[in-house]
Amino acid sequence: MFDWNENPELNITPLVDVMLVLLAILMVTTPILVYEEGINLPSGSKTTQITEIPYLEIQIDKQRDVHIISNNKKNKFSLKELPDNMVLLSNSHNKDTAIHIKADKELFYNDVMFVLKSLKEAGFLKIALETSG
Image 1 (cartoon, rainbow, N blue to C red):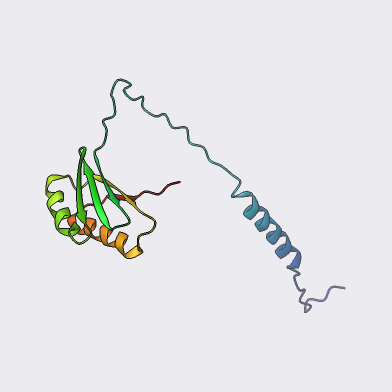
Image 2 (cartoon, rainbow, N blue to C red):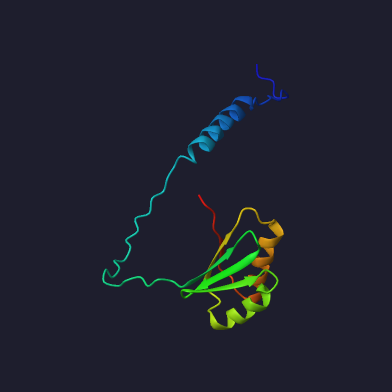
């Protein structure tokens, strides 16, 4: 005979185990999937030539002298004179002009940072430090 007052308990442990295994499989396989979009790039003109982008080169030697090379002209300043001369130079150059700084490795960190700060205050934004390597 059947007892209507008996409450059967559900065992959900196997269900949880199966779900955890499926979750682990999903987590492992998802990063492996690669979606590739086919992109058709427009064809460019092969007759146009790239013009050379003008840039300034700043060289700082061991004696803390700053040499600014622009348009094949070389100007020499002391480190103290640099901020005023950079403001004057910024009036004759575009602010988007790329500036390459070559500093001697014997210089102090503060000297190079002073040159960078002077360039930023003059309005130049594209500044790169060159290394040998």
